[in-house]
Length: 423
Ligand code: PGA
Ligand code: ZN
Picture 1: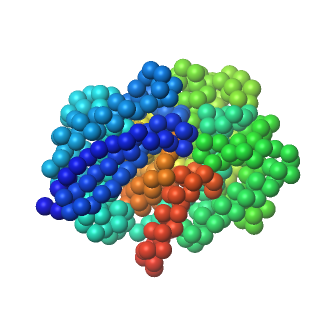
Picture 2 (picture 1 turned 90 degrees about the vertical axis):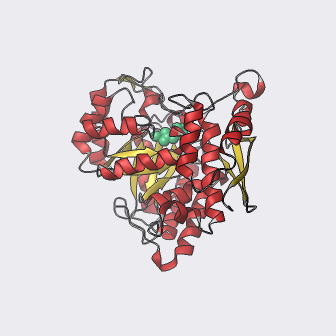
Picture 3 (picture 1 turned 180 degrees about the horizontal axis):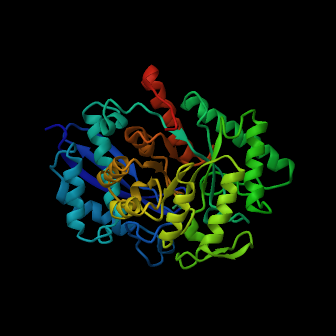
């Protein structure tokens, strides 16, 4: 059988932060040979699937030789000879042989690399682009790029508490134009920062990370850049926020400390009030992790207040895990879940998380990690899942641009069939 898996192996490579990660190779009986590379987060949720790191001296303990060995030995033995089109069976078998709740024995980094490479190999072998292989012939919507143009929090060394400020070109007629809108805004923002003597160095996801005096100065400067670039805030381009509130909640328990700006301690209600003022004042369309993952009650209150007007996304709260998304649906904690493949560790489980959101009438927001590689799996995955939007960083840094360029290619390939709409 031509889609039968002939060999599986892995290699330790570096991610965009210069930390080790896993690249996996899968070869099929028909000679198809592919690789896939695993991303890695910095502001991670407590309940994420476990990235297996070696500890010890190499790379400050961050080596992944154990995960690589797990692919080369146990996983390779288990799945060699299986049919690469049996994605679910392969993913479930890896979960079974790992034997833990959180993939901590073999490592989510070992398992996900194989899962992605298997999907990619199967798609090539059956002659379909990856987005069509995973999403069927209905997969024609190219996502609105939520471009993270200012980085704060854990992703930057500056005085901004909120981790991500994304420009969202939902008013553009198509992906190519949308990408242009926000790339132009990025360049205008750069010249504004320069003219004010602020740094134009970039953070982990390629957004600027200047020492704004306040969180407000960050969003107001972005709005100024949108206007100067010739676009209407709220009409052509809106703003999406990610507080990544775990990073400002030392015990991730709903007690906050806005350490970077020096604003100091806040209760959950005070943070909700501050974010509520922003929603009133600024053209905000989406807010991710407005509260920390231990603050389910805060999430519920936030969603009750704003869930009819904006998309409220749980990232660290749900960690792409149906167990937590289910609770969120029952409790009204959000109306959308962030989907990060390595938070859960297989392609199959990521698709299950998407399905659960869809069935509940929720949205889902496909996302990269702050540590990435030039692998473009995410771009195809976002089109396949038909979620309407994705986040994959700024208009700088090759590992981010690689995904945008792949989306341009997909839109081009789809020709007149390509769709672009926020909802
Ligand atoms: P991470 O950040 O990849 O560092 O977790 C992304 C996010 O919080 O959305
Ligand atoms: Zn987040």
